[in-house]
Length: 436
Image (tube, rainbow, N blue to C red):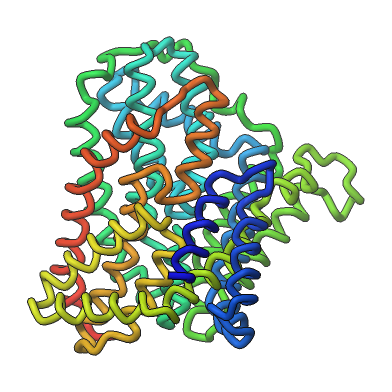
């Protein structure tokens, strides 16, 4: 009960952030209390740090890359191209926008897709004079697809990185399993969003009202370097995976290289357009404190018995067969994530899977189902992920206020069918692959 009280108070502080305390200091405060009362031990700090450090710094590096590219106009350029590819047909622009969000989520993580693309989409919709109901459909689609399609690569979501590191899954093996599954998730997302919002989308819009994509580019040097850098980075992930090189080292190297280009370091900064300092300040450094703090608090919950009960539930699911075990694990993880927040939920699920006495093939299915549940499950409630809370904050700043009740109504309508389709795809696809 003491561990549960500490976790609950910590989670409330993380969501509330009184007096600008920030998610990091709130979580770290909870961890200090857990240490002082003996819910966790000092030895647990090293264990938790070993679990989270690579994922945390990978995420920070990805956001730095995203912020620099955003300031250079990369994402606005892509969005304007997509708007022109729609050729004036609203019913084509809608799925193209969803696909763009999926691509950005794959390479720049779900947070990047939701937080960077949303303001750009809003600006384009205003330029096209879309009605408020139509704009609302695009906004919801952009925020929703950022999470539902954040499955394909280890770097696509912080949840993926933590899970892959915990179970020592290589970049290539993870992609082989999840890229096809993510395509199913994308398809299901498009279908569900179209059923929910298709009638709101205008049939036609004026392409002539759009700016030229080239006008969005603010730093041509950074823009020209973006595509080669991203291609090399993706290749580097696959090459270094068998060598055991931490993903954060690879991503961090790319971030430093991009900072050097943006900051014109070889010219001592002369001619720089994008502020590297601003990008570094805008990076989510609080996530470092949040990761170690919140995960320590959750580790205390595990020590207090939560992991044991989770393992028992997973063992029961395993007895029902691999299909039920996969779907059941995914929905169980999703429900826990929607209540607990997906970051602590990911660790709870990983610890329970590791402890559960289940066949190896079933365990692998459960590992990926836990990832899917924690990637998609947060869409049930606003507190399911920090990205959703930040996204709602960004929308409020743009004049689009979505109440928690309104959000949950949409989330509970849209999420279950997409989650089910994705888990079924995993249950059918993974057994067909050669063993790892």
